[in-house]
Length: 260
Image (cartoon, rainbow, N blue to C red; front, side, top):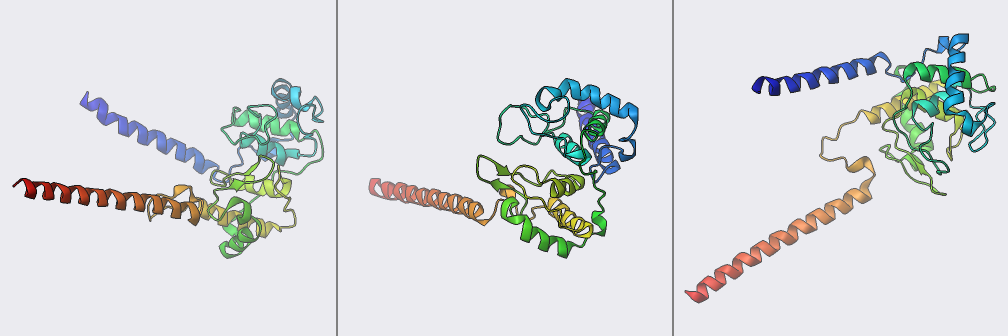
């Protein structure tokens, strides 16, 4: 039994190392091999998957029946929506689909992206190089264009019409570049940014994603107001408990003196 207990942490460490290695193989989040997207057999597999999982909403030509027209989404749009798990949506008619793990394997994602890219004339999957980006420039771009909705700590926030600006903590480098070009939901299109500026912005967001919280709990990185609220509630509560404890001790001391 003791050997079994000792083996559990080792197994967990191996699994964690495997997951880390898999992430290191694709640190930017491409998932697909872009050179294979033109292969006829890959496109044919994607068409089969599309006819099973997508055609009922988006229609056979991508025009959309109970869902948006996806013909202009291109490879980049298909890649973003599928790799982020926002498509397929879990519920019909929702204002905004949630991010989740994709139900498709990397090979199936590649096939679907290849097929959807043939439905219209949309953008290609962007090539990104955040290592070449400038953190100072990226920070300035983020504060000017992104922080108002996604907040300084990437936590996101509420928008109008039942939508929200999602957290940027789990997004990949490629997905960041894609949404800048696509402008999904209520997000504006930022195609005015140069490739160098996009790399700088991605570098800054990745820097924020990797930050620790050496001061304690991050509290979701939602800003000073909720952090101050927690400090006041916890501090006031603790002060009240200490006051009650002191008062009860003094009362017991007084009662003991009277009895004596």
